[in-house]
Length: 307
Picture (cartoon, rainbow, N blue to C red):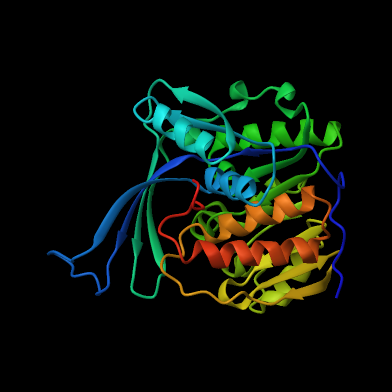
């Protein structure tokens, strides 16, 4: 089935991602956590953050001009800048004089499922003062990490960026990012905040939480009445594409041996947006997203091999 053509420019132009840059401490443990004592684990420190990961995957998927606006601490600004450049992303990082870079402890179990302990640090201190309409020069798509919507001033930045993008005819996509944070903010408050978005990219849990619908297809259809194009990722079951209240494509999964599911949704987002920029319709773009997600779960951390 051919999916809907996503709104906005058909081909070319840059992708601007605004979102979080984080230092990930990934601990893979094969046995259950032993509370109050030691649990053997493989521990690595890796670059991460949903926004940064998505940007890196977009570049890996072939987008020639990917830019990332984010806020980091001075202690790791140079390291993150170098890693982003190595991944093919143009970093537009603001160094925070007071807060450290966001840090996420990812506990990954034997089933490759992950649990996050999140210190947002500098990431959610990004504000309208860090934004300029000129950042949209040459940009064909703007993507906002959902984490921006969970603090007052970063949410203000997201609102200003969306307004400026729409004034220029640049379509906006949002990845809701966290069911836990959505629950704390409130589903209706989140949906109100992203009402100007053209594309919404929730996972199954986020879609259910945002709609109250237990069935993922029903949730996708309902969300596409609020945001014109909604693509719900289903993990190992593929993805759903919905437009204007109707599911228009069911994208099959790509088989993979899961090692670490961290960043799989970010991989989907990056590859999906890169495909849209190349002129693909939403169903084809979702297929590319599923391929990237399958590659991501076979890797440690949330970045592609070059990131």
